[in-house]
Image 1: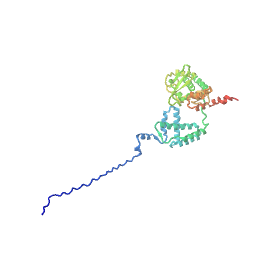
Image 2: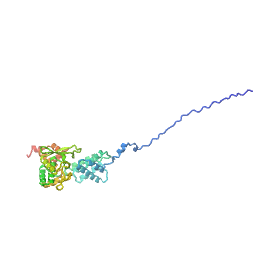
Image 3: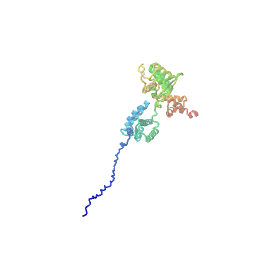
Image 4: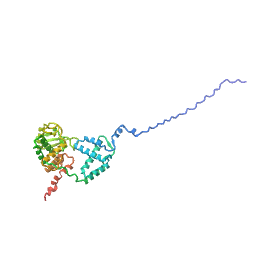
Length: 355
């Protein structure tokens, strides 16, 4: 019997299964983004200053930066009247057209509409300068067309303005003031003469300081008008004061002992005040002295300026001369003031005369 082989037969080792690649899929979930998340800090800050409509309270506060007190008062009053009429409605271009129609139906002069529209536009401008954006403009092309119609159809309204005070009227008023033999009379004579000579607005006269006056060798004087209605950046202009008015001004400054500070001041009793004579007080002086001089027609704080313009034209000044002397930016207003004088020296008056 054949011997069994003791040789061990080793079975082949099992082959491990091939490693299969494992695919790992990462699913990136996109976060849902809101409009607020996309806004930058700058945009966020800007959105805080977007107004749906004109803010009247903000506008009136911003008017405090306007240099002219009379303009501030007129614009604020016009805005408040418009706001009251709105009764909670938003101030839009179309609504302002409706309001202009109401003003027209009340029989008001076109100037009332002009002031209202100017106030609304200035309010929007000042709001923009302060960084605010108004989503719906308060005035636009509809307002412009309605205002033009107001001016065209309302022509002739409001022409009963106060009468002028020409140079001869001013001279008589100054003599009446000087006859009082009182510091107040000396002040009034100087005040009237300076306003008439330099064609000042009453706000400009009120704002004068002693340091603004420089007396000249020929007896006249120059006054620095540091800021005015037509010079809102304060570039400054120089007004001329004729010799007679300059002499009265010097007498007032010597009598009151004024070397600095406000030029025209209140005179309670025989004491010279320290504060500035306001525009309303100056207007009262003009009316009181005109009445004292026997002038019966209505006068206002603007009468000296208008009358001086007419006197200049009667002496041969051109419209350009007048515009420079009175610091008018546009020739339209002085041309209106002197329309009668211009007619009397126009081509027909020169060439045909009384024929």
